[in-house]
Length: 22
Image (cartoon, rainbow, N blue to C red; front, side, top):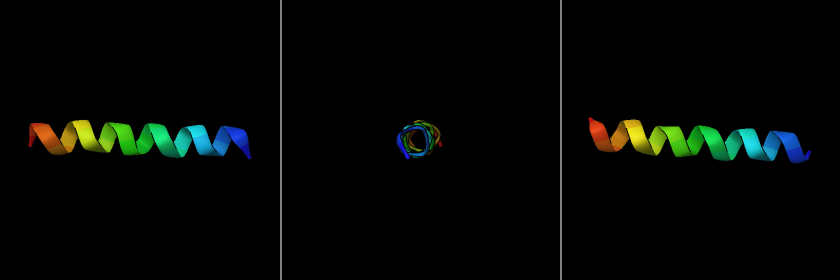
């Protein structure tokens, strides 16, 4: 599923941003 792959990448991207801020 192409959409699911994009969502997973977006989640990991935001996790990285929040992880770096904390």
